Image (tube, rainbow, N blue to C red):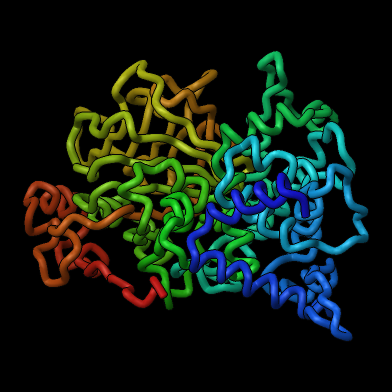
Length: 470
């Protein structure tokens, strides 16, 4: 190896702490052992290398095979000699280290050659369809490896919606951000057939942080390397929030794991570490007073619902819900859709109609609403539980969201509310007064609605499933 090559290699090596270097050395030695190049043979030192077969054997369970092949192609893209090595040749130690350095510690410019080769084995521009396939493989690999390593923090493939459609939806959402040099964003079939050159992909990787975060997770958890080091960003630590309140209750959430990851990334940073189920129509009954009793004064929440046509959508409420005839919340609130497409819709600045909850009043609308205006909400659940609307012609004024439900006026199939971040002290401790004790007005309203005070669901204590973090 020449001096220039040696210096480049040393520069990459120096990005890693001594304990990280030994971690990388250990994985490479294991892989080269599987490759049959275990060092000295017949008295001659043999360069340790890693074959595709060895990488596949090592990662057979943690990662889907197509992602292992993509990682191998990425390693092969590291050019040590000035001429590309043949795809059949094994990976040298320098290629392995530079690959790790660029993808885990590098900027978009350093990552791009590797990512281009992971998208396509051949050099040159790549089609939108190839980028979609790469992104789907990447997201599916994140879900797979986190499940395999038991790093889903209380979520599981059993207690969430089937993740296949979620993988496709998140991939479609991320690649919809591809911008051509003239600033246009191709859509639909045009997007699939458009050729994108390296500079466009580099710009995309720079603007869309999920691509780098997902690659980092796949490498760290797939190779089981550098997965516990302190330099991990909050993006990785809080990629999946801890899940509380669903364990052992036989419930399958309306969320799939890709949508949990995507919606969580849009929450304020201080709320991304934990979600706790506080209301489910399947568990607590289909009743608006039950809903109010479970969600009032519980801190910021995510509301998600499914209409009878199968559309899944909801909103993030930045403040505790309060029963009152005024709008509440702030500009951190947003609406979102999960199915048939995954998108987040943030505030426009047009008005401050972020969130609204009212019950038992004759002069003002009774129900839960987000965005728009009375009688014309971006998302509305009527106090006559089971009915709702999502009105947007063409867009919700508060959040710029389209109609989220299949039909403008919809029938509700299921609903969940998740408290995000740490619960307020008044809500968290068992044995504290319930909201009915604290707020006599709410108690009176519920009794007027025929819901007696001793209703079990309304006084159900918050369950903290501590072992869900394991």
